[in-house]
Image 1 (cartoon, rainbow over the protein chains, first blue to last red):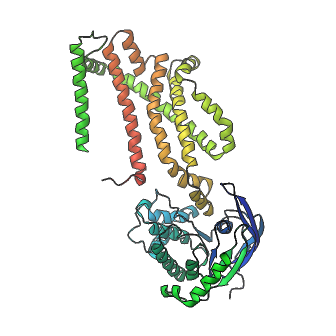
Image 2: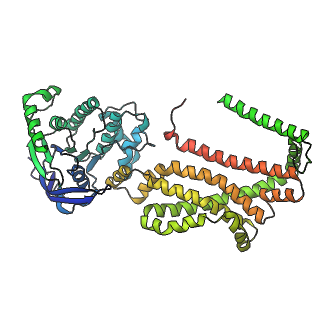
Image 3: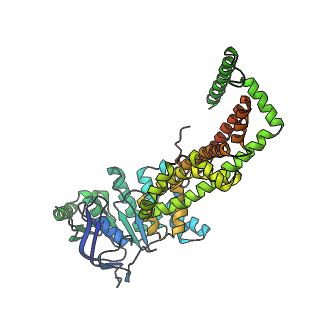
Length: 252
Length: 252
């Protein structure tokens, strides 16, 4: 096992006023994530899941505590971190390929090499033939695939996903979950994904963290030792139901 | 599309016919209402002696220089205001107050200060263009989605990259809307300036025609102004169609 965990979170606290006058809060959160582990963060709304993710992305500075990424303290946005938002968050004036190219363009990568990488990503998320399409012509699921491709194009070690399938219908959502697992198995990353679906988190993750409502504290750290590859039928197995019950109890 | 054009030509034809009939049946003196045929005659003579083109060129130069100056200053100030809320709070009372001064009222001042030449006209055009463009730029920049700003930040984009890759394209629809209004306003500004004091331009021509009871000449100049405003409006619309193709709905 890798001696240095990919991600170390030490006594992290964060208090921020939200736009609607409330508070985003996290209180004294500590956990570690091993490299290539798939972790889901669950919790009721207002438990600071998104705040945690924004801290990890370097978009927010925590009020207290520290974050170590591969042993180095995190002070701001990092290149080795890919971020997927709740909405696909694509630039409507850019085509699918151009949206995926954006991170490489900002990084200043040479054009041919960048195009090459972007095309590989298009293939990885199964959007061949849609390179020139504009976001307005994509379905919600397709748009979110582009967002995932964009997050992966720099080959980050850590992938952060903030309820990436929250706005999709249930069936598309399940399909996107399968898709994400396939991508994760093809390119091993450390993944931290925020969700509020218990079954989604159990189906995808190696480990589920549950945060309590404000102030957000770590309430449950559950290993999901279901065999991989995960199959759709597992959702109906007794082991799955048992885990779901434990998570549910922690959220209530 | 073709039926549309036919309809436009038909409506113009009918309007001309109505005008001709009114001029003949009413038997107004020419200095009150010249017939379309008389206006056409006058148009041909001004075209032949070069006075129409010379004066149109003079006005067009004022309009374009004023537009460039007004849009330029408004863009620079608009970007600064959009970036700084305190600065906007500090300056906006003055900016809004400046809009309650009718441009016609300060045009004489500008002519006194800067002489009856090109400079005073350009300044009047710029002043009249300034406000709508400024407002649109501030609104356009403020409307850039926060999620996309976060994305740029997480990708560690520089200020210039954020401007070029996000803010400019995102604000472009509103910005071009401002330019479209500005283009027609600039024509008005030039005429106002020329009315106050000038020895060339279409506004000057209107004044000359009025002074000599040469009403047909007034009509010629007015039509030239309308054509100029429509041309500028059309050019901006063309630019919009080209730059904002991503926004257009597929209606064909």
